[in-house]
Length: 125
Image (cartoon, rainbow, N blue to C red; front, side, top):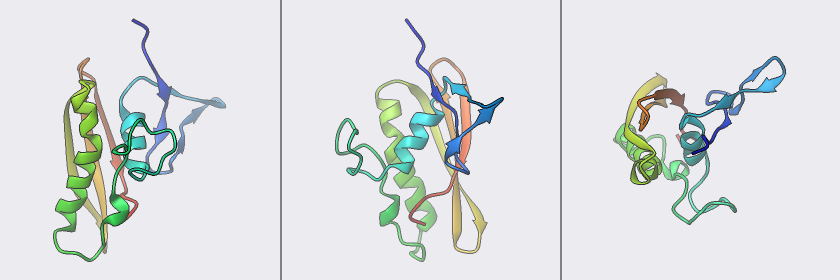
């Protein structure tokens, strides 16, 4: 079976990671996870269905329990990676990055045993 790969995305900048003038290939689930989080649910033309994506834009900054809400939205968006058996485990932790600002630290344990981690800044927060 041929391995699938995508281009490595830097979650902080949203741009491709470049080395020697070329985008870096990535076989991990980091790009599929990043795309699911960055795309607003139901608004991407090429999405396989209307549940693809996340609802971060519906989260209000100053609500109570914003940390729990952000982690729930993230977990819901990434759950299809578990359902289609591409990942064994996904851990989402909220990290305060300043006044009224939250970041999500995401760790994905893939079926092949590899672990991908990245920090994501929710769009709607």
